Length: 372
Image 1: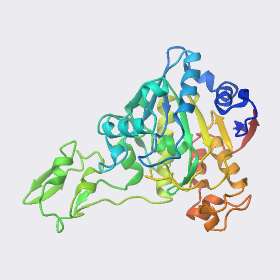
Image 2 (image 1 turned 90 degrees about the horizontal axis):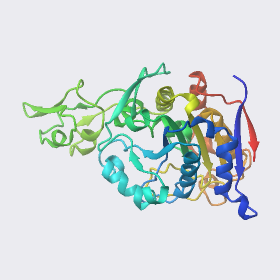
Image 3 (image 1 turned 135 degrees about the vertical axis):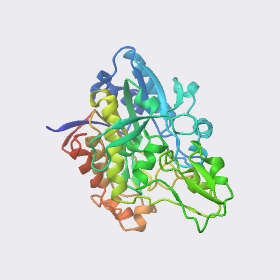
Image 4 (image 1 turned 90 degrees about the vertical axis):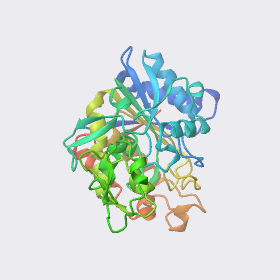
């Protein structure tokens, strides 16, 4: 595999014709992402709408510009996102996710295209996809994404606790998975009831969407065969009587990349394009109900048809950038240009996700940065 091309538009704009929206449209064309869409294709535009209270997510105006570009080449775009794992979060159901999306500016009117909850009302509408992953051999992809003819992945590049940084690969591997797909990357096994803690209250029975839990002799019992791993029972149990062995770094990063590979497999690598917005680079993901001071000045937008290359290029730019005084990197003495800000903040090998993706043939870390 030769070097991948990553196209770059800097943040500076000196005239009306150099605005970021104009640059974004040009990136769509010169990166070749315009070629992934055939006339009449149903095109999923994958976004993260942010949590309620988050203020640093990608603004809807950028997504709207991409919607217009997709229509120019004959595609039929829809904006897609999936429910969060569990049941307690407001974005854990389609109704709550749509509400938060609207609060943060993501509606059919503002986007110029329908907003779709890709995994349905409770996050269990999915397609089982085979994958020869580093850990997983199958993954559950949110149905609307799996059914799409093409996909444009719009990612807010930032620091991420579970993978070192949160970029395209996480947007694919977590954001495109149903709740069952998220379970596969976040846990080693299905939930189990700890009998000595269970008092038979039945709350878990009520909240189980697939009727996998019954009460037997005054204790709850979870059928492993019926369970979809949605994590509802564990979150609602008032006595913490439901246990699940969850993954942690580096296992979770490896599994998330496996799910990302499944998404690419079902849609086709030649039918997906990627945009990383290296702006408002915060020290936490947008699923948090708050946003911290960005750790570097805004850099710009990157585009590529290679998910590994665009993430690696984004990470390199963040590391080369000077840190913002008073931000989280200042607290760990990592403001210098060339200092590995991701490792300084999380003590994790952020390169692991890229190595895993390279091994699966998703792309290459060897890239050429092509400025507009």
